[in-house]
Length: 360
Image (tube, helix red, strand yellow):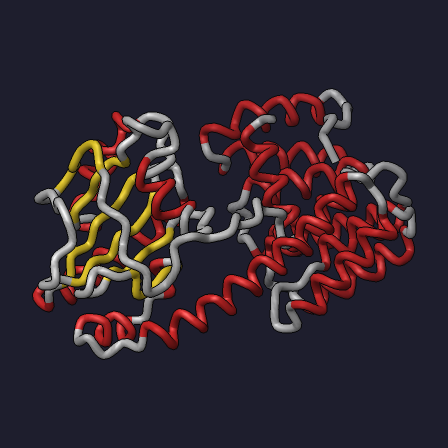
């Protein structure tokens, strides 16, 4: 799939609790002795052969291709700078890297935003990597970035996203005042809830894939009821209504969701895109799509190529060809380099009066 289309698909389905691979039965738990450190190369900083009782360690799993990792790295670096004089050691464990040759250059480019130790996973015995297998997989963790905190007793004291590690918790661990047993119970409950959410997500994902709209509607209701304070799922609900060909209901939902969140460009864009790529949508639905896409473009200040592309399609479908050409031309101007070629092809289609083909 074209990379731009992939990004578009992710944006449109932002309202879905995406189906993830359910965590296998974890064998590494809070309070267990930390597995050995197994690295093939230390890219930055002095090697740490083993854990000692003089330090607390954060072992953070990341990769150069991971967007969320790039966001968390500067934060983790600040944490290390703040606590390094209090016996904290931070190790960035690079895993799941298809080409490790680019890691040193990445670290160098990060400069003073990534000054802690960095090492490459040891893949000499397992293609997945020893750290990935004996830490991440063993703990039932299937997403990065993920951080493990190892206390002075050499045991796993905390597991989670680096941005979720509160400094107060880290300070307690450093001071040997953190209740590992109590946290282990809390973490187990969190893991159980996560597995339940993943099961519901898989159920919803399967129903949507099979276009079993009745089952999808029921599954989505289960997802919503399980997360009363969670994200909203208007885009997914809209997808189900359109699948059922309930165009009147789809328009009502799209307009209601749009009015409730007028400054949310991503939501406006997702709703509009769902309307303009679904075959059979009536004129009223297309008019709603153009209104929402225009609202999305206003919220994005005309600087988002995906929003502009959606607006162009809505304009073209409503017979506003000149406006569609102008919007798509603007989309090409503001798009990242990897999307320009794809958008230029779409622009050419509009210029000759052809509706570009896309996957729903």
